[in-house]
Length: 586
Ligand code: ATP
Ligand code: MG
Image 1 (tube, helix red, strand yellow):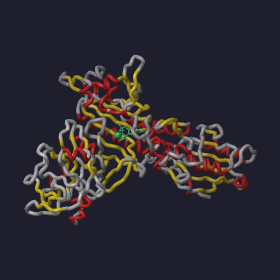
Image 2: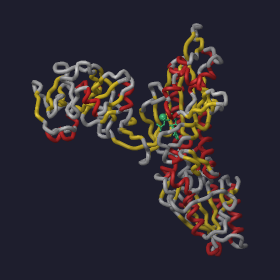
Image 3: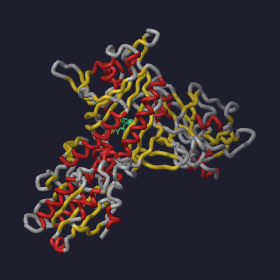
């Protein structure tokens, strides 16, 4: 194995925290000289950051190859024509980076490659006998994010592994989808990520069945709910369960609720939990049609779900509400304007009697009965799930966590093959659209997620599998003929064992070297000083646990030779590789 020399490496570490870096991974990757910001959401990987990125890419590559997915490389530049075919030139919105060439032909920089790969396969794969096939690439992606932030976690240019599979039928898609999901879990494990696979929303890509892989982290943008029974979901995707109404009055009663406008005020006034009330929201669809939505009082509307249920859904402004004759704060399903469409969350289907606004300023109804007093035009899944809601599988209370979405798998079905006319001949010689799946790993986001989970005050604590190098040898003096040659020899013998070794041969104070080593996060540091050498010893420090011990110089290569060497393949990212070393403490 090679020996890297700190004096030659381009690692511009920084002592102070950068001003605009608010989370650990962003701050530490900048400070450790691994990345640099070029413009908003656009980064350069410096040598050490790039080494880590390549290791993660390699892990991803190995797991893709292991399930028979074949690597290709598609262009970043994509013709707008393809995006018009799929309909996404309009649907994708401002996140799509658009540009035109010298002939005024329109293009985009790929945010994802469903269109491109579908056009590649179209006309080329003709028979069911050639299916299934899965292709992938590891490549730069562009998305003009509305709020690029958190460094590599949400950038405008980032590295993704994207894979696409083509099938003759749903069973075959399911098989690849399952293999891919398993591979994604293994990739997270090999990167030493604590993760969960969650039910998710398919967003812009389309399709119905999808799982997101979340690296658990407080700084994560995604909120998850999970249950010990194994259920877990993105709060945006999970379905909520409503609580029964408390008032089981025989007839609907109108009660005065002066000055009451919010659910909390109503619940307090009636001395019932918010969960026993029904919240109303008003909106309009793309045709300007009025919709009044009802959800359990203790939940929030998920606007993405509302948008999916109602084409072009938008919440009404206060002025629009007035123009429709609605009373904000006391809306209900009884006595709505004639043409209003009533859409209610599916969970309310089970709730016979509602505590809800009376469409009259200062009044609410209790015991408004579904069917008798009002009707619902459509039922839909509309809410954001809350921590504490009942688990849809086992009814236990859901627990909450935050996560970073590092990857996602989708069953696309025929969404793209149909719109783009990509077909094959089935067993009966009949033309059919391909059944497709697509699968993405955020490689650069994964790098940041690893740092989010493996760091402390002093810096990064890389797992062995993705560390920029495994062992750093730190001579306290350089260029002398006592300490330095011992350090060089040690570096060489450790490298010979198959470890990637860094020799900190800079003429710097020990404090500077220690601080840099902790900041950069080499998993193991070996410190060679004059005093130790006099006793034939060096100090060995383990970054992950902070353990430190003196070992005899002669024993080091032998002790390290006991350590497993295939860290890249270890199920825990090799974080425990040196566990046994410190048992030999002498
Ligand atoms: P998000 O919801 O976080 O915006 P997404 O669901 O739109 O992400 P996908 O289309 O599923 O993203 O892309 C696959 C993977 O690419 C994601 O799981 C994520 O790891 C990564 N990714 C997506 N957007 C970004 C970004 N702006 N910066 C870095 N990585 C990203
Ligand atoms: Mg996603």
